Length: 226
Image (cartoon, rainbow, N blue to C red; front, side):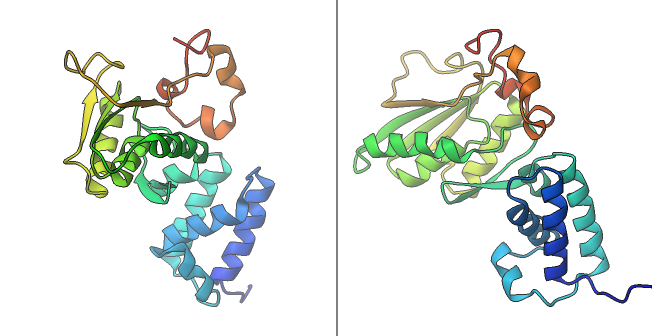
């Protein structure tokens, strides 16, 4: 019988190798995120605890997370959150996982805004609320309205607004694009990251996208513009 102990370092090394063989593009990062979640600590704390041995509960939790990740389930869904624009956002399978490239949209809006003045911002297809919440956090004088067709996604956005203490300036509405907005609504900025993938392209998406993320937020119809 092996007498080797399952230390933090050993788990990280073995998980990194395992995820690499299963197609992960960032196996070490993913291993650290999953282990930190399993241990209930911050990822940075792992670096000072390499010699610590995992408890049976931690090992069981980690083993299950790694098994699911090897089947392409997104890390953000496994741990229930994702960083975006240096903020932490709750995510569920009802919303897209926030993408780093979407940060450029937020950056462009904030660069163009006069953040010393009040402003009104509309976010269409808000999903997790990462765009709307980030704008509200970084523009304290802005009033933000976020719209999503999915009631479940809208609820995630509300939770993120509350988590970042901007719920008093961020209204989340359920409906199709402009439909739920009051008549004569006016905005200084309109932001959106809408579904744009053609129906015939959906099958070619990576497994972690096509198999797990909500198609309502991805599929843009036959021409990607529906």
